[in-house]
Image (cartoon, rainbow, N blue to C red):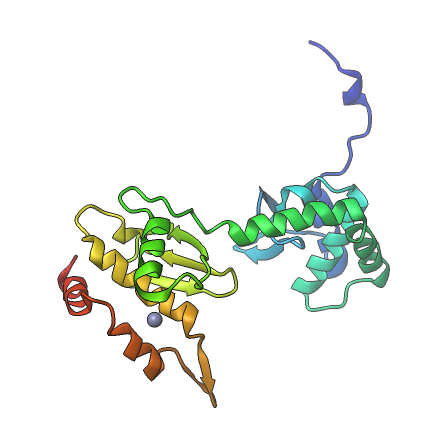
Length: 239
Ligand SMILES: [Zn+2]
């Protein structure tokens, strides 16, 4: 049997152990629930901690999981305090902020945030249909060259009920991957895309407390789509 010198050195405290220790301190109990750590490439900077079925489920980004032990401890104080709805100790908040304000750290987390906001957008090329090509042909036919091209993608799960949506935060049109099948005629995919392009053109109006998602001008313009009735009736009967 080999004995490695490193085995004789005191082992640094693991993230799980840090969170358990901090939990005991905040809860003022001797025992803390077990911690299950999930490291994912795209998690919000601050991470997520919740208690589910007696286990502390901790989600951290790769960048945060690799941060120095004192920073992970500061994060533990912040997240555990939040769990107990109590204020985290000020010096740990300061320590966390100081670290997050470092230029190199900021750069890493900004890159993660950017990737995170892109993560659901698959890209326009489906198995059957290319959304970029469909977008451009509809733009030429109905909108003119001034309509900017958003991010385009297919939903991860095929949905029969949510056929498409325009996400104005990420400036993205996402179509249900249920439409990316050879049985679905092109004019049906075009109709769903056309509808979402109209949402780009007609931003949601807020009238008092009601949101008017399809204002009259929207409905009027939707009628310009050549095969509107045909597309709608196909969608009504399709399965
Ligand atoms: Zn709509």
